[in-house]
Amino acid sequence: MIARTPHLNDERLLDRYLAVRSGEMPDPPAADHLADCAECTARYDELAGFMDHVRADADAETDAVFPAERLRLQQQHIARRLEAVGRPPRVITFPARLAGAKLSAGRAGITRWKYGAAAASLILVGGIGAMGVGALYDSMWRPAQRARVFATPRPARLAPVATDGNQPAPDPAADDAFLSDLELALERPRTRELQAFDALTPHVRTVSDKAR
Amino acid sequence: MSTDVRTALDPAPAAESPEPGKRRVAPLSEDSRLATEIRALAERGEMDEARERFGGLVAAHQRRALRIAYQYLRDAAEADEAVQDAFVKVFSHIGSYREAWPFEVWFTRILINGCLDRRKARSRRDRWFTSSTDATPADEARASLSAAASRPDANPEGRILARERRERLAAAIDRLDGRQRTVFMLCHYGDCTPREVSAMTGLNESTVRVHLFRAARKLRGLLGGKP
Picture 1 (spheres, rainbow over the protein chains, first blue to last red):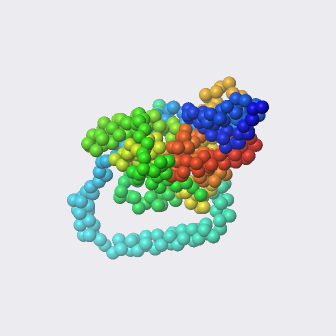
Picture 2: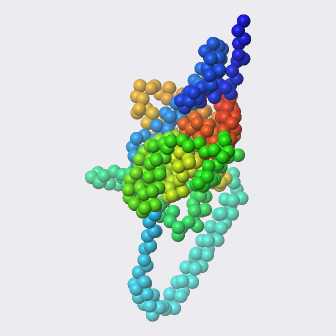
Picture 3: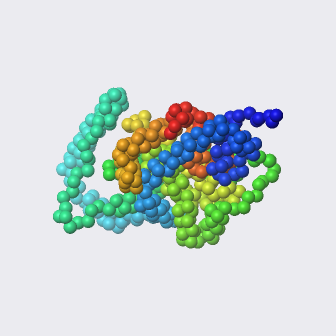
């Protein structure tokens, strides 16, 4: 009488599945057992079917969300961003001579009514600021109300633009390129300290994609 | 708990070697060879040539990277950015690439780190704003339209069922423990072997297998044995 090996547990079945998928040599005793045992073969087929379905679903979903056109656009964005790697950040020089001239002209022409206007605007800004603080306090201490405000579906924020019909439709690739440039500018070392705030706020591309 | 792969840019492999003191010398893969060439070009200052060659690596790994990032983040825009960031980071740090690692392993570690950072940032944001952990309506609409375009014969009911199935699966994966999720993602969606996942995460290979087994068992339990 030939002693039969015990049934394979799920762990060994999964090991075999992984080995088969990656083209490795499966465990020979497990392979021998599967060849003889219909029960284990059925369990293996069920496990392999489950794993294959999970993978196929993920593939189909990713292909649907990222079609070939979007992959091509992403490659372009990456190429554009790589252009900036290893190059010093651009510095936009401030027109010092012009600014100096305007400043001196301004000093000469300061009059009393200008002081008055400055004081009035200061009071106005202070008032608006106080109202803003009040609103912030309300939003922090009324979370339920805040959640309702955010959860309420908003009307479309993008107003339609009247055109004469001859103008080309807005190019999403150009928008993406602009947003990509904007993000690139924000990543420069001079604005690195703003990234903590950036992490706390919705990303500009996320917002634009949601708006589309 | 998440499997953080913080040392992705470090030169030394984090995984335990099966035989301490002996390094397995494996032949360089095509990608790894290309990465080595790009590193040499960058060191010589031939950046334009390096960028051009790097395009080949992007094309080769882009789809797999997007699959991992999208399944991890469930948001097309975030996955797009995570993948872009990973490629840019890899190119910026190509000087620290060592042939001891396959390029794929090195790149995937950087990608997963980025995805983990984004998940953390999102959870911080979600304390203040409405939740965005599920696929956005725009993503779903885009996915439905693309799926309908690619399979015009599929009936609407079938598409709805497929979408529900995917949502159920995504929810089940989201319920996995952080390490189980990472290991499952890398093995099953990233086409990585347990040995490669071990190199990426620093976990022992047998631990990777245990996490993977538990993840698969839990998913089958959550989904009733069917996806």
